[in-house]
Length: 365
Image (cartoon, rainbow, N blue to C red; front, side, top):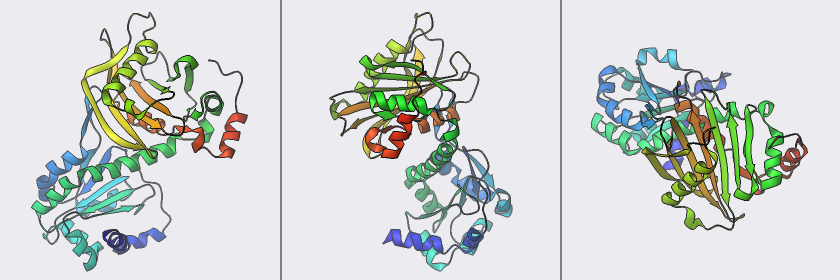
């Protein structure tokens, strides 16, 4: 019933009339969220909002997933085309933001907003690919509690739309290496989106290993590897096994040019979560890689899952080496590219034929 109320509530936004207008794409940085709030209320709510959205990841320097930027309700028109917006205030507090929320929703929505676990999200409100969230409650204490209670859902919504926007910009047929994708499909029964500036560095059938590299030898390298285990069991899906498998692979293939050192998982930072990878149970790990002799390092992301149809364990791994740059957006790009992975069973017949037809026999292994 709540879901029905939620849909009804969204339709009651008074400012929805703008949807009839032709909308331009949302603008701004992916990692910025504009928070429409009065200064005193924002100060009280900042800790809860920061715990929700300004989550730090190590790359290896700490970087925030999102940065909050407060905007006065008097200035809301100046940010209406931004990608990520939150409007937050207690109901009937007398603040300008509270009055603004009252002006854009009717009484039935206000009742819903007063529920302990209710907040309203609206996509493409003022611009395309935009997410606006209204969070409110009967009082400041309840509002703070609501934010913290729903922090995982709130963060996920902004991460997901950010990934969707990035996916839309990265997955371009114009810059796709379809001949490499076709080779991978023909030889191994799976594909991953290959951007124009990636090259196939290694393909080792006897080890079930494929390595894609971007800008080798530069100060902004990116690496993707796919490794799989045939005739496997879901029992491999434990964090210790994932660490051991990754370290074994990188010790063998991620080595310095003089073969004197190799990549290992750093001890400083490592987190794992259970996630859904296209309908499959998966372990998502995020951490830092290092050399066994130290001296260089960077962030990595990894999805490991069991595919029932092929009876394979797949490990998809993306790493970044960019010592002179912030790496939050780079590692997000790697994450989104890993999510393009598909087995042959997931591809349409036309897509399979198109990829196989595009195979260029001159592709170097």
